[in-house]
Image (cartoon, rainbow, N blue to C red; front, side, top):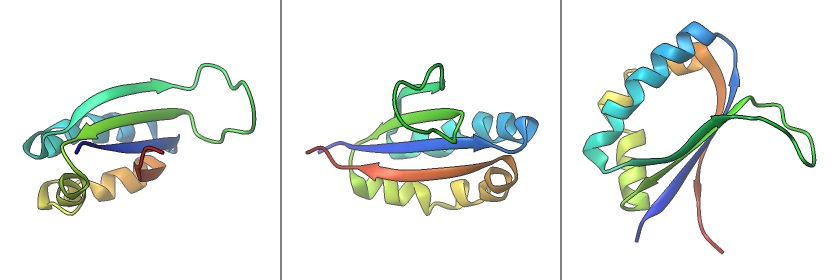
Length: 95
């Protein structure tokens, strides 16, 4: 059963974020990830939003997400992520 990964992004350093974003797909590919959506917040219809971007990815399973997140390839770019933005990264379960 496929699983969804959600990331909300509050930008700290736009240049570092570009570097991070350019490297993420190569870390996800071996784990079967597919980007479903990525974009900047255009308009808030209700509530308060502190982040500027969101992304949603589909993986073959929750185990595949865990394997990607803990992979050497992804962990090698975590320091760039931390300098680039505050991110909330989570697995979504449908209900």
